[in-house]
Image 1 (cartoon, rainbow, N blue to C red):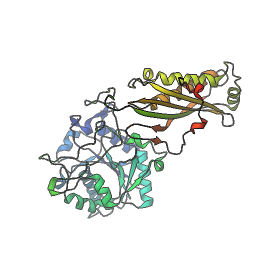
Image 2: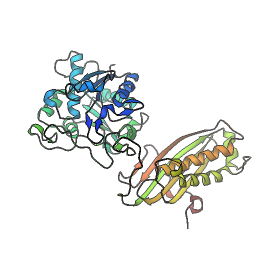
Image 3: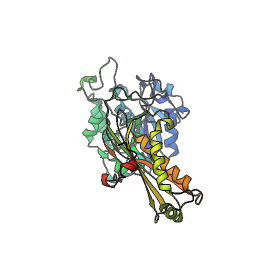
Image 4: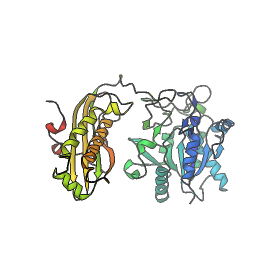
Length: 412
C-alpha cells in the first residue's frame, strides 16, 4: 500500500533569519535530511509549500517539489497541504481530489521538526486505515501536533473551501473536518511524541505567529476572512539554541521559583545468582545496595558538572531506592528529586538513577561481567510551566513506600 508524505518546506524564519528548510541538521540541510529519512523508511516523499520559483533555493532535496497555489499564497501550512494533496491527486488520475486510490492517508510533516519520526507517522497511517477518520493528529504534552499528522485525501474539497474563505488556522480546520486526536498512550512504542514535536524554529515561551501575506495582515485577515489564532502551537522546542542556532544555556531568571519534582527509573540486568548475592550483601566488595544509594545521591548533586548546559540546582531532597529482583535477574532503581527553583530536576533524577546503576555494576562486576544497564527514563514530573507529567503505563511510587529521611539524603 502506498504511503505518501508531504514535507512542508515552509519559508524564511523571521526568528532565525534563514530558510527553515535549509537549516543544517546532521551535516546537511534539514529538508534534505527529512527527505532521506522518510524515503529510507519506505515513504513516497513530496515537498510542498512556498511561492512559485522558491523551490530553486532548495537545491535538489531528492524529491519532487510543488509550490503553493497562487490563490492561496500566504495562507501558511494549509496552503502547502492543499498543494501536496492536489499534486498527489493529479499523479493518481483523480479529477477532484476526492480519494487517492492507493493511499488511505497522507502524512504531513513540517520541515522544522528535526526529529520527525517515520515510525510515529506510520502508526498514525495504520490507525487511519482502520478508523476512517478525516485526520489523525497526535497529542504531545497536552497539545495537538497537526504538522506531524496524517490526513485523508478526501479532505481536499473541504480544505479548498476553507482556504477560499481566506482562513488559515490549522486548528480551525481540524475542528471543521472533525479530526481525531491520538493521545500519547496510543503512540507507545512508536517514539516519544515530545521528541518528534520539537520545533527548531519556535522560540522558547512564545507562540509562533500566524503566516503573514504581503501588507502585514495576519493570515486570518487576508481576503476578508476572520482574524484567527496562530496557525500551530508546538509542544516542544529546542530551547538550548539561540537565535543563530548555536547552543546556549537557557536563561531562567524570569521564571518564578516553584516546587519541582522528578522521578526517574532504570534497571541493571544480571544473572539470578548475582542478584541473590547482591540482595544478601554477599558480594566481594560488600553491600552494593547501600553504595548504590549513596552513589545516586552524589550523582544528582553533581549533575551540572556532567551535563554541559544544566543549571546548578539547589536540591531539597534526593531519594534513591535500589531494589533487587532475584527472580527477574535484575536490580530496579528509582530516584525522586525535589527542589524549589526556576528549572526542573529531570536531569538530576536521571543522573541519580544512572549513578546508582553504575555503582551496582562496579560492585558486582567481579562475579558478573555481562550485566546490562538500561531503561533509564523519567516517569513523573511535577511543577513548571507545562504542569505535571506521568509516563504512560507507569505509576509513581507511593509516598509511604519511599525511603526514609536517612536514606533520602535530606538535611534535618
